[in-house]
Length: 252
Image (cartoon, rainbow, N blue to C red; front, side, top):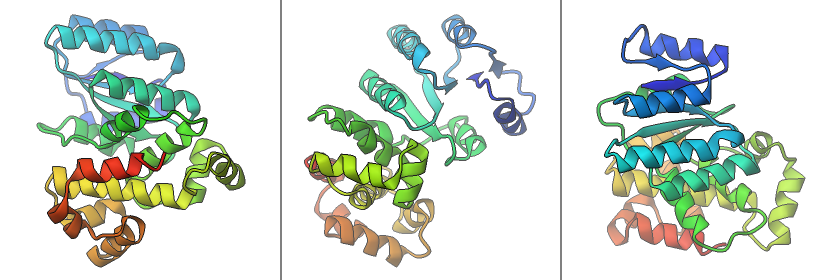
């Protein structure tokens, strides 16, 4: 595993997870991290997002893929227009990638999951890739933000704070383009993530409920039904993840 995380506090958190494992290579700069990637047989990369280094990262990943080196990527990032664009670029590159959001996700848990023998694929990048194939609105960054934040149940204020926008600004930008209100975006996002979990990963609704942050399976089922018109179990019987994703992107 190659790790580039300039934040000292985050480094300390990760060291508690990976310990003194000799297979870990800590890098003090993005240049060193990418050089290590090309010179080693590493299969995982933990990367702190920086818009100035996104192109170099993508080039390195493309070279690794061409050489038959499958890389699992974890991107530690905040929410912004620049990071939204980077997520789109990574999604289009077809890399096995995951997001760890600053201010929301537990980095140590994300790294631990990445380092497991068979980490489960995340839905963020398939969803964003499909969104990017449609009309690109001025509020596209909000849509991407909702997808990344909407993996679990959160309020509109959480989304606005992570994006550095006031709730009023968030609502006004979406309204100006006749897009769904923030609550609807977050509701649809969590519903699509839930369908990925129960339909693609074959999780039980109970497990999906725990990850989504609900108290009971009935609570998650009711939430999904209010936003997309059917409960998770019914969605799994009548269609699939792709069908619900198509309905979601059609909102844009």
